[in-house]
Image (cartoon, rainbow, N blue to C red; front, side):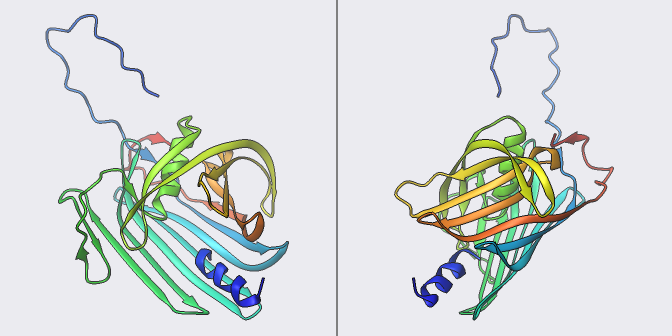
Amino acid sequence: MTMMSTISKWRQRAPFLCLPLLAMPAMAEPASEPLPLELTPYQAEYVVYRNGRSHGKAERELKQVDGVYTLRYRSEISWMVFRDRREEQTRFHIQGSQVQPLEYRMNRSGTGPSRNYVLTLDPQKEELREGAKGELKSHSWDDSWLDQLSYHQQLAIDLAAGKRAFSYEVLNRRGDPKTYDFRVVTKELLPLPYGNVMAYRIERVEEDSERQIYAWVAPDLDYLLVRIWHGENNVEQVDVQLHKVHWQQPDATTAAARLR
């Protein structure tokens, strides 16, 4: 594999049961809305590896203000002549146990062309807009849409609820939906720069694909993403591992339900 081919590939990656009612009360109470989950804000630091050597760092940060969460990811990678700096951010709120994205942004710079993407979602108007000018997408609205970052949070919520297989409608950076399928492979003790943690290993299920994507989520760390591994033809391309995490106190005004 040539160096430029490898650099190009780096750039492309950088239960409910319904029971019948036996009797109906004379005055039925109106059904109440389920309390949204309360997620614990955090700041996490990661080391970016390739073939056992550190080539950069990454950060994930979750904040909450007035019931709206912001999940941000930043990374800086340096490998030979290759440089990649990117930042992704999603703003969302939670309806019951469903993540509802409101805005997604991604900026990338370094070797090769820079990239900037914006998606804006308005659940009340049922509108999806794309780009800095907010051009309206023509396809119909879907309440289950997630973006390239918010589906990480939905997977953590569903994993905590006991699910072991997942299917999401994820918008790409141009606002076009695609089905993403995942499944839990095993639960294992994972050695990390942070220390040893028990984590679920999750794989993305793609037929006839040369890519392999594995993610590890730790239940004892509030289902935090602690490692992600990308490969092609089983050859490692990038391995991001947790180094540090700092937990913040959640806003007392948010609902009392916790992720775990």
